[in-house]
Amino acid sequence: MPARKRRNPFYVLLIPVGLAFVVTAFAYGFMAFQAVNATRAEAGRYSTHPLFQCLRAHGDAAMIIELAALAVLTVAAIAADTWLSDPAATTPEKRI
Image 1 (cartoon, rainbow, N blue to C red):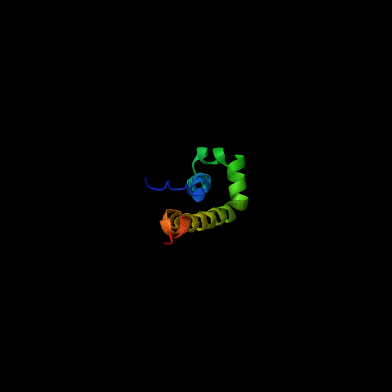
Image 2: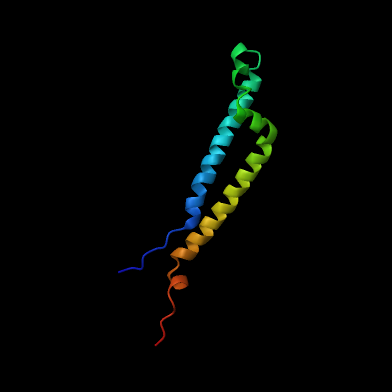
């Protein structure tokens, strides 16, 4: 029976960081779309929303931090996956 493969903890961390990045990117894109269509009367309807106010103040930094976290966690997940799936790294060498 083959040895059971251990779970990679970085996959669990990638999910919430990825979801945060997706929400931030969509909200940032929607905010930019609203700014382009500012001549319409309904364009300013969402401008006072707290999420858009926060993105106006800290949106660039949030996107950069989330993208950097995704990059680091992706590299860590790939490296840990290689290490966790290597049978030589998990079992001691058999000696005769």
